[in-house]
Amino acid sequence: MNEENSVGKINKLAFWPAVIALVAFVIAGIVNTQAVGNAMTKILSVIANYFGAYINILSLVFLILAAVIIIGKYGDVIIGGKDAKPDYSMPTWCAMSICSGIGTGLLFWAIGEPIFHYMQTPTAIGQAQTRTAGIFAVAQAMWDWSFIQYAMYAVCGAAFAILCFNKGKSLSISSIVECVTNKKIPWLNTIVTCLVIFCLMGATANSMGVGLMQIGAGLETVFGIAQSPIVWILIAAFVSTIFILSCVSGIGKGLKIISSICMYFFIFLLIFVFVFGNTPFIGKITSEAIGFIIDHWGTQTMLMNAMAPKDTWFSEWSVMYWNSFIMYAPIIGMFLARMGKGRTVRTFMLVQVLVPSIFCIIWIGIFGGQTIFLQTSGTLDVWNAVQTSGMQATVFQILGSLPGSKIITVLFLCTITLSFCTLADPMASVASTLSVDGLSADDEPPKKQKVLVGIILAAVACTLVISGGTTAIKGMINLNGLLQSIVMILCAVAFFKSGKKQDNEHVD
Image 1 (cartoon, one colour):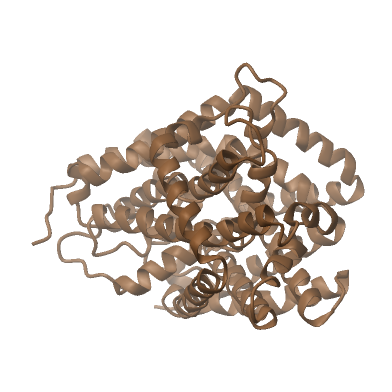
Image 2 (cartoon, rainbow, N blue to C red; image 1 turned 60 degrees about the horizontal axis):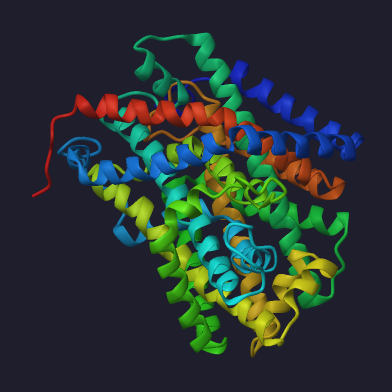
């Protein structure tokens, strides 16, 4: 069967309106960057103050739901039925799970976030620039990048996996909506799918834009190439070519290879910084930060500004993080579902939640710990560097404090590039999948659709960087995250509803 017959037709009513709306928003941001940015900042403040509690509670609920699925009878169900066989080995599966959900964000904020929390500690924690502030800074960064987000992704992924592999439904948002409502509602499916595509492409383009700035800062640090629109365009063209080729080759080829290579870089960088950084300090603050999480994980999830109205920390960090993860959850869940066939739901949940969470905690402990050491020891005034040079350039100044700084900076730059691709590849794949009607979890979208989506994402990302429109997109992400929370809740309902109808199948 040829590709056109096996994958269905492009859903033009869902895809093109989403693309047009995104382009219109970007153009508005370019024409009047300040006005759009101010409007989005205002929206962010309103969402945080009026819906922040809802976002926090929902995040905690999904963490609890993940635990319930792992412990309860639903975990016994085999994705794809008792005769299904896994498509990927455990090491390959773990590598793809780690890389597809991280992107460039962890590389950037594992170093950047702790210094912000240390210098601008929330009122509820106490005074900034103290020992408590330092431990909190590393612990909060660990918590922000670990269990909450991966619990969201895993619950949504489990819903798509059961519906697609066990119930024979298409890999689409419409399958979730139909499962919950027990009927087909074409217009509602189209609207929800259009919204999800819009959210996905806007968020991915913003993340790619940040990645372009990071790579540009790295090239300037290592090779003295000044950042400019031409440089960003060339970077976008180079990186986009890699991730589009990877995406077109399919999940079992391109992403599998890139993720495996990326993991080697990750592991090398972890070992290098741990050994050649201040190892005793890193070990101590990492262990104390983990202890802080064990004692305060509820507070870290729900922290706001009750009785401290002037404190805006929660709106700039925790609520914004949970909102962005909520926005990504159904999307990444769709992608992760494709790797679950032949595994029990319990194994799927454990791998998707524990493996990347543990990796992120270790990574932040090492890189964040070294950053706090540099600041508190006076070796490098990290905070001053952030204020004067920006976070992108400061990351490379921190790496420059280590032995063999040129080599480690080049390796870090390569890792950012590969991580950029491991984010863009699955996101382009999911956007393409959403754009096509009737795909199963084993089907790949048409190659021409993947290429088209990849080009659009790269063009929007590059435009955002050149025009300075990333702030506006960030505000849009938070608004869309609030809307996407409805889709995430539908995913949870669909999982428990469809899981009830499955026979309990155990692995011997």
